[in-house]
Structures are given as C-alpha cells and as structure tokens.
Amino acid sequence: MSAQATEATAKVPGEIVKSVQTFVAEHGGSATAVLQSLGTEGVRVTLVGDDGVLGDRVVGSRAAAEALVDRVDGLTAAEEWNRELSSAATPRRGHYARMAGWVAKQTTFPKARNER
Image 1 (tube, rainbow, N blue to C red):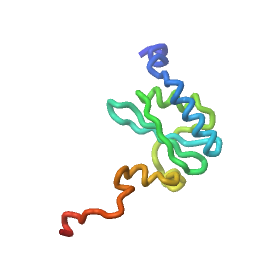
Image 2: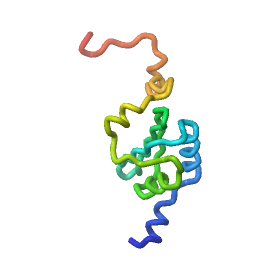
Image 3: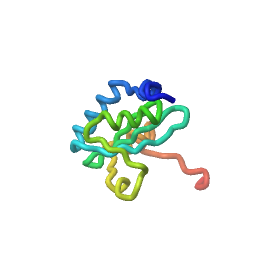
Image 4: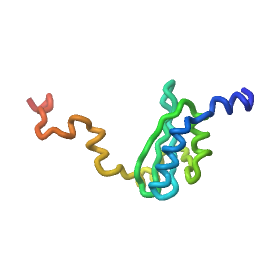
C-alpha cells in the first residue's frame, strides 16, 4: 500500500480529535491511550488521564487510532494494559451506576436461580 493510501485511510473525524483533546486538557494535561481492536467495527481507544479517569472513543481502523494519538498533544500510546496503568485507572463517580443501566436504580433484586 502506498503512503498516500495509508494517509487516506488514517483520517480521524474532527469531533473525535476535539473530544480527546478536551479529555486530555480536563484530566491533567496528558493521558495514555490503549488501542484495542474491535474486529470489523474498528479500534477502541481507551484513555486514562493523569488523574486516572477513564474515557474512550472508537475509530474505524488501527491507522486512524494511531493517527489520533499522533494528533493530540499530551497523548501517548501504551502497548497493552499493564499493572501500573491498570492501577492508575479510576472510574469517575457514577460510572458503575451508568454502566449498570436500569439495574442501578433498583432497590430489590430477584433471587438468583440457584437460590430459589
């Protein structure tokens, strides 16, 4: 593949670049990005800010994810999740409730099948 073709496929939407720049600015001025393949859907760019807060965006390809890391000042890529990065990651307040969806608002829960 030529360099021009690689550049063409590595375009990152401006709204994604802007949102990642905002994330980096709001969470200590730098962040680490872990690039995780989602198969045919693209690549998830999981962000860990200096303060440990998590964020993520999805882009169309590995080349686009790498281009995003290159375009955002203060953003560095990690090869993988390691002990130090995992220890630094701290979900923001309310994250668990948001991820739990409707379950987060429940006060009573049905018994598990093995408890009936």
